[in-house]
Length: 416
Image 1: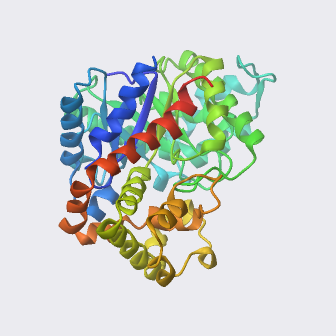
Image 2: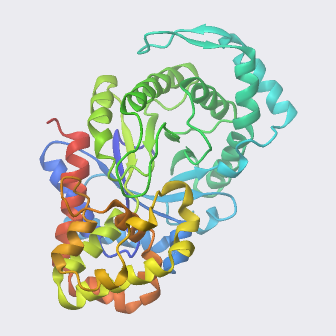
């Protein structure tokens, strides 16, 4: 099974927006852009909302049947490891292997020796097509990369082998995630990481490195745009080199995690993938959940009241909700409106604060980030919340489709 050139990870916390999400891909196809939807949901999200991996497959297949979608689509076991992969094996055909816990662990001496021997020929200057200057490696570069990343890539091999033993070699797509590490990987490190994956025979088709700058949940990129462009371009060049040099899949491509709402990066990414004629995988995580809240607020009355109640509880439980996401949010508590203030808001007040429109004077990125991580509150409402999604399906669906297509897909894949 091979991942298509362009693929798009779409999260859906409560599994009610599959059709609305898929409509965005139908719209793109009409514009001549073929993008494969990849429904993704992590073990943490399943645990929070009390769902199962099978429900993601059911949602995807139902949406595909409803709209008569004839393109490829996938279901991603998002950020899994050996401890929980078995829960996802039957229903998933795309596996994001998360090896964060093994980054920095001491590698096996034999593995380290093999890695040093395998990569010794790269000590010195390595010309890479697409880079103005060659990459320059020292023996210390090899040693340092081995000490930091080799054990993680060995763990990726263990997870991959376990999945292969159950599903068979050709029946799934493998992504390796190294985006939750302490620092961005350099192009040199990325090349050696790919060499390690080749050493352990992991046929990775997409890899999610950590990029320079901040990729906070649900808000725009914070960082140096020129630095990001340099890294992204260099990483694309390295992937093309690695695909040929290490005999890795020809469709090897970058994956951008927490890619939702990174509006300032989209033109940079679009121009780069067009220049290198390469693919892209991007994940939008929890923006669909936020569009549900926007739709409820727009619906007024009971819908607005529910959205206000969710914010009140999220505000009061700030520490609890933010702890698991501390590395991917930057919320300034003094910029959050008080719940009693929000309780008096109109539909327009709420939607202006939440909808990601930087040109709107009412947009509040701290408000948006808090609600992004506050889906646990809605999960605790149970049927009361999910029934509201049914009651206000039309207005919610419109927001979900428009968000994916107009704010994400068009800027990323369609020429301006």
